[in-house]
Length: 169
Image 1 (cartoon, rainbow, N blue to C red):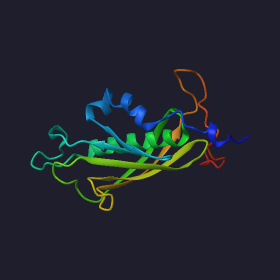
Image 2: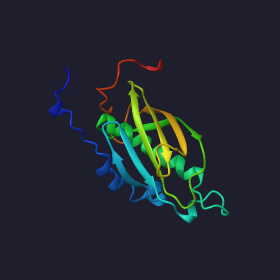
Image 3: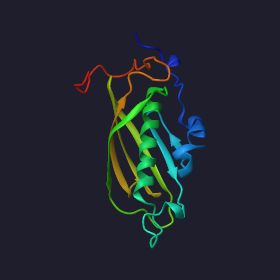
Image 4: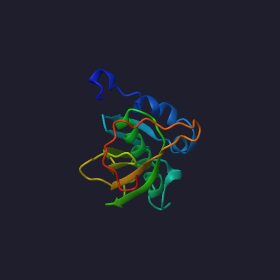
């Protein structure tokens, strides 16, 4: 049975959740910030910091923090799409760098969740330094839906996922 539109309001809201996600832990240490979101996408900002440089002779953010930015934006795009915060695990996150970010520039990561199945979610997006038409990197990823939350012993609700699987069901 499908829900009507009034019952489909998401419980997960990327802007509200970012207040909790980014105050501690790895994402907090990186200084990630919420930027924007839509029904199936999230955009986060990684501010420029001198201690996040890849090469001390160039004022350009290292690739590792950018990968972390894109991984977090990917997970949040999945939760924004499903409307719930349910455990996911990164199976594959491909990052194709196009160019270095500009010196002393923040980098934004915008990721959309474009397909879900019972067992997986598929994402794609870009990292940019202010111009979405000139990306720093393109990303594509696959995330596994965790069938059981080990803290609760319950299966997360994934009723809206496609019946088509990835072959591993």
